Image (cartoon, rainbow, N blue to C red; front, top):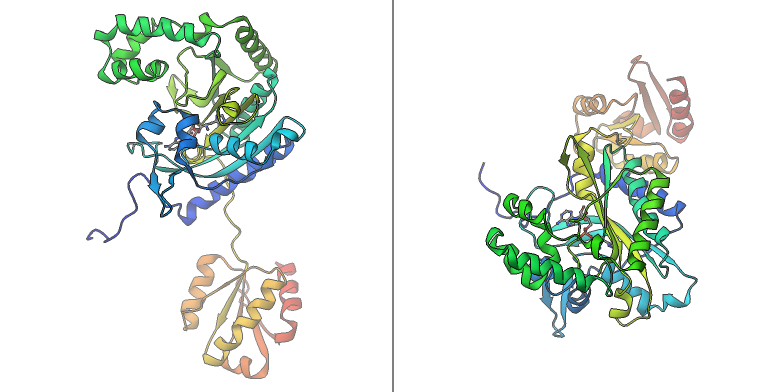
Length: 426
Ligand code: HAM
């Protein structure tokens, strides 16, 4: 087969009809949990001022350095397709004066996000996320509620072997000390680290810990750990987070290498993945506390915490374990028509059936009865209603029970009542 003239852009994918059930199931499950935990929905534009992301996600992060889809408008503004949701939610929180509402403000969102990543398994250039942000509260219980909300959704979707990885990367008070110790270590080990690590050591040293190169990982296993540098306030915060997690009996581990790829985090960071026999799925959800971001973007001194989950990755994990999703119900009734007059009269009859909440399949475009009955049996319809030329002229219609092959002729005006009777007999 020759290549089609137009193909989908690299790193993007169509969501085909057969996969829609997964997206619906995930959204429906997430909405139930959001509603229980009292989150309100917010939608923000897909495009934002590029500087919003540069300021919040960080100039030296992969997302800003390499992965933003940016464009210049006719008015010469530089806008970017949103690579993540937190920056936009904080912008909206400040812009709409949400700090005057009772705090914390709890918001959830869902939609497509864009990162110009190197295409590989689980990494798309357009992907779907649902997320939460809780603004205006610094109690560690909020960090755990963010973890729990994501964990509960993944659990309710039937995913097994979930593992929460937690770390604390400190705050403005203690992180500079950690950063200094890490930079010193990275300088000393530069000959056993890859080029990327050496470059990052200068621009964003915490991100070096994320390197996937095995040799680097070996060297980095001796790197100083952020938890050893925490000030008293950050140490107590982490201690409380872990105590709440113990109480919840959520499976978790402390991961000293977890730093996350966005610059706005303070204190708690976390990711949730599946982990079985040492095989890790990669992050299905991730988040953390960001106590400086609202102020950095021009708002007040508002602590906050949140998380987001990758819908496309969750679907792969669900498919891998054969998680249950219910496919849409098939119509029990099929409508067949023969001849031009019957075809003309068929649309209003179908409309009556739709208004009566009766799901009906039809075979418009196929004029032979044989073809239409073939489609009816492929769909598994139990009853076929047939409108032929003679019935169309006499305002009558045939109802055929596909199991018994019994056929009755009824008045068109009685069709709803008669169909309901036939369905009751099934
Ligand atoms: P993130 O870790 O960059 O965090 O993204 C959250 C989740 O989105 C990831 O765990 C992953 O499942 C999914 N994801 C990210 N990039 C891709 C991609 N290229 N293709 C497919 N899935 C992807 C954030 O975005 C933060 N805004 C989360 C947050 C909210 N932190 C605080 N509040």
